[in-house]
Length: 298
Image (cartoon, rainbow, N blue to C red):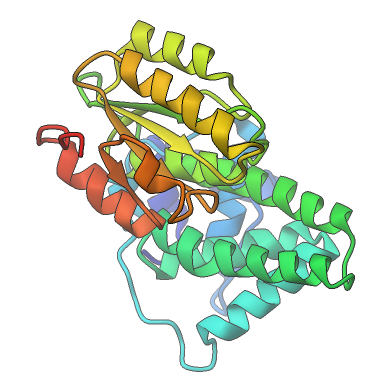
């Protein structure tokens, strides 16, 4: 996917007239660059800003170089812009609270790599891991990490508008984080990975009691129920509550687990259908299970 678009491409993607897009550009509603020849060009980050500010979404993703599932067509990064340099720069932008720079870098990464999974595994995770180490060593403030999370949450929700709406017969994935787990970012990234693979999704949020997670599953009967586990307050009570949840979950619903708190000590004591230690694995699982049968419990 290119990261600079013509008004004609944007018009096709939004299913509006080209003259409307040009008018929005001239009025400043869509921030626009000009070529040496005076032609309008709309960077991806400016398109995302426009979608967010006008509550619009992409109707025809193919018009801007995306396939039917919303996965960007990969292309190789320029040699002078290595992944390590990008991660370090993104980390600093998060610490400085620069939303505009973070938006530019996220949109650039998304357009030059293979979708949400790469964005999560290769950019966001390493950057936040580094920030966490800085906080532990006293080299940064906790508010900087939290502010970075808020900025990133906003920006990945902007990316959501680039993904086509799943059709009504697409399988449903639902999930959230367990009691005591306040981490929103991994949970929302899980949802976007499923949507990118063509699933309908229901994200229940964070810090949800197992009894309430069970009620949601029984009401909506998803094909997959994910649990994003980044923090466990008490392993013993968590295992007991999870075991009861898994036992009472309706048959045919696959439990998919992931998250930093799913340690090698914890996982063998749990019954689940699949475990993913990264968003790439989750994307592969979502693609496989979209048309196949749920994985059997171990």
